[in-house]
Length: 196
Image (cartoon, rainbow, N blue to C red; front, top):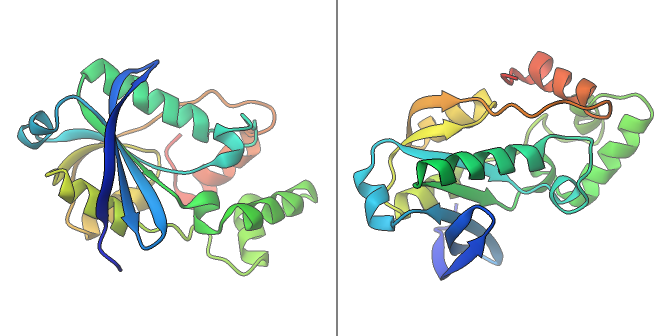
C-alpha cells in the first residue's frame, strides 16, 4: 500500500459549521479528511469521534433512496459538529469498493430480484471489497490513534483495529428506512452483520 500524502488543505464554511478540509493523495486517487475543531485539540482528545465514510455518488449526489449512505454521512457530520471536535475520513471507494460502473451493474441485477450481496458475487466481487489502510494512515497523520467510531459495520471496526487504530467505542447511526431501501438494510443486517 502506497503512503498517503497530505496534498492540500483549507477551511470550508458549511451547514455544519466551519470544516477544515484536508485532501490526501495515494497515487492519482484523492481522499479527504473533514476536521471539526482545531487539529491540536484532536491530538489531545482521546478518543476522537470519527466516521470513516465511503463515497456514494448515487446517494450523495442523486439522493437515491436505494441506500442510507447520505443520511449516515449527514448524521455523522451533525454529531461531530455538536461535539465541536471530530473527523470524517471520506474514502473514494464507491460501491463497497467495486466502483460506480459495477455498482450500477449490481443495481441492474437487484432490479431482477437479486439482493446486494449476491449481486456483487454474480459480478465476481467480494461482498464488501473496501479496505481501511488509507483511513488508518490519514488518522495517523492527524495524530489520532483512538476513536469513537460512528458506524453500523463491524467489519470497519475490525479493519481499523487490525491497522492499529483502537476503537474505544462504536456508535450506530440510525437512518429511517424507506420503501426502496428497507430490504437492502435488512440484507446488510442479516448477511453482513450490520447493526441497524
